[in-house]
Image (cartoon, rainbow, N blue to C red; front, side, top):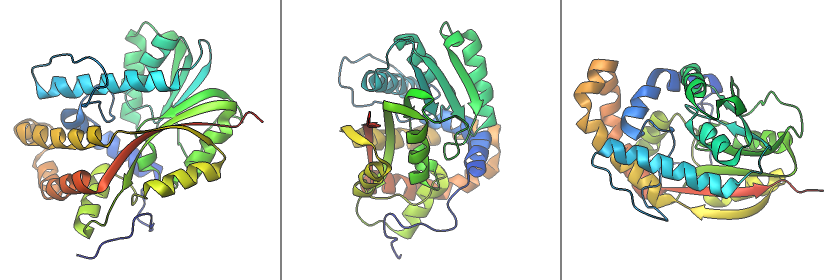
Length: 292
């Protein structure tokens, strides 16, 4: 099949409403296959100590929690600072960030069901009084210029139909000297049209760009790059585990979401898996808005 050039765009890029609708409809399915702790890629290749688990679901949750802890260390906001969580998922990372750093965190998501889960977690969490959640679009942030001391966006940029706009919005709401931590998937090599289409369908995303393009867009926004961490191995293992859990929990998925969900997803899993394994890279990048 004809391969698409990484970084090309078309009119089929998802709108924020489509991204939100995907999470509203299939967020629980993602939790069943990706892990329910945080709705982001987990740290399956740890930098520190190993903690034993005895189920694949437990491994997925442990990896996501480990990833959250590592990301908190990289952002490291000061106590009392205001932090924006752009694409906060189901809220656990924002709450953990507030708990560990004693910062005040605002989380936004385009999924109404995720927002409900955020509020449930907030009500039961010891750091809940320092965290607020709201419905919000990463490409049109409802906050004044220079409102936040720091921000992070974990696995949210891959959904944006206009990543440069999302970066500019993050830049706008950060105070001078404020840091942003972002995670992003990029494409390496040329994949088949079937592989790219399966990835975009299952992940509700526009075409991936190259890593060089990502860095160029970051720098054109005005950010200074402080650190780049290649975490591709974790992303590849996450997709491998997703595939195993999808097959292992087929009966449960069918009972909860209907046979239509399996009919839709089954033919996509193979090309999605091969594209993720052979053509995607995954990085965490810490950047800073210049102080001047």
